[in-house]
Length: 231
Image: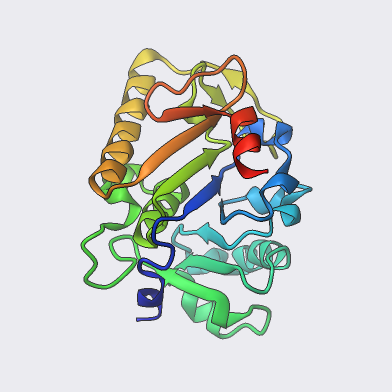
């Protein structure tokens, strides 16, 4: 029921969804501090993350109780970088040990399941994709749609660009087009499902790109145009 309070909370507003591609290293995060910002996965490990003043943050993966202590440490690092008003989305499998911890602001935590975010909602979680593609990306887009945002801007979605860049800003890996064509085709098929999901819910989805890159599935917008938009 707690999640129901988020439904249509941001009708007709825009949000910037920050992912963890290597292109993030070239983005000036300070420019987004007055926008609605949704962070996903490990973006909080970015040295300038706190400049974003994120409103929402998602780590929706299920947690195996055997590694709960490790996840607890990981979540503590992230939660310490979140502002007091930032809402944190976690998988329901983490609730039992979060409840037994005194390290977190439980009022700011919202739980999701792999097949449910808002009870009885007509909008499926994770953009309605199959289990193999459920993750922080699809959850975050789906949550933004559920909350009523009508424009979603993807920042650091390097898997959705051409040329495709594999790697994250935190792991030192950066490869251009390392996948065979059949893998790229499947990835783009999944992205087409996300785009269709957004269109069916009246939401425009943009992929923020840098000079020299294109967005084969999502509508693209150049980063310099984004800077002009939010100044």
